[in-house]
Image (cartoon, rainbow, N blue to C red; front, side):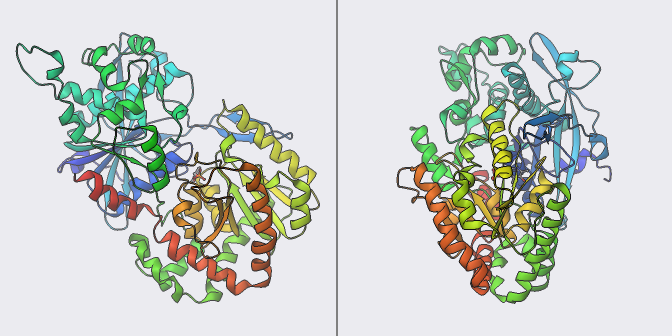
Length: 570
Ligand SMILES: *Cc1c(COP(=O)(O)O)cnc(C)c1O
């Protein structure tokens, strides 16, 4: 990586994009899953489009964790260290933030995202692992989503307050602050303090806080469709940690962040002029959850170039030149000859099957319909729905279906860990009838292999918990149709028998979990298997529509253009 001076980036005012996690590439282990990969894709599209942006995150040097399963399917979490100096440059500047009566020093690392379009976008990773800090404070930026609530709040202080100070220290002029989820919401407090009105003899102390000015500067994207998922801290903990001399008084914080607890979502909602959910349905669900706020929706996307496998890149380069920086060109995918589309898919599939057979004992083959399911192992995603009636699955699919699974459970998510164990157990039970492989340590590299190499991408969330979902969008970039519950993005992307298939009732009909499994098995048996094996032309037509109707729209280039016109220039 060529050394960059920061001066190159501070000439024009920027939009600052704050995210607790950012997944730019597999080796930079500052991500755990969907939220981080979305942040990385956002930044990559912003770079391609040459948007004036700077991104801020934490330098989690010990990463999230590396997953290993023992023979019983029990997840073990191993350290996932990496070396920042191999990818980025330590800058000499420092800022300090008062936490628990100590002055915690924060240093920046500069990573520069480079695009073939000539775009260059700086990403600032914040690091407290400095000799002048206590061991406890050095640890703050080490583990992504590790530790307890105290640890989490310290991280959010570093991200929100430390990050805002760092941008100023480095010389950035910021014209908009975009909070990707509530983790960075403390930045609003730093801005309240910075833009405090200098009035003498005010009769009401609240008049000095220029909330309107801060609001005008802030954009908030919420990702969590359930109240329980939002970051909350007790004010007792906040009192203990917030010792910074320039922190706004607690009574002001309570006015914006909630009376009973420091609610990061409330704080962001109260101090942003533009608020959005990450899919149309999620916008509606959020609107019901937060009456009194105007909640918009900008549906997520994925970075097309990152999430297209090599064989499809070659195919698109040949027939759809310019596609990577203008995914709308996917509208012309019908120009690609049927045989070449299928062959590009088979190349990706053979690569995946070879990989799976190298990693597991499953003995998969190239010609069997292969279903993929890979994402965070957590209860609402119901990874086991497909296996919920093993005998029925075997009856429908013996010799005709093989399944590739992957996904990490958060170290504290016991239900998620049990889900993985259950899949391992059921795989053994189905041995000889349906081949099932669990690929360990799901990450960005294995994700690309799996989403591009399977024939069908399955998703079975309990509604309305899947705010958007993005792995299905990645699949569509490789001509892989989705088979999914109508939640998140799929409500918008689904056209039955054209872009894929739904599972269960329409999105406006009450949830019926029992019916979901039945519907899944029925469609598999009566529509998906017959189309795949007996109507290959029809199948390739569906692959084509997945690209021309889904990849065409569900990409971060379209998404970023919307953020610009709907949020950033308002
Ligand atoms: C895309 C991606 C996700 C998000 O997947 P969803 O199915 O949308 O939850 C999670 N982890 C990794 C490594 C990814 O690449």
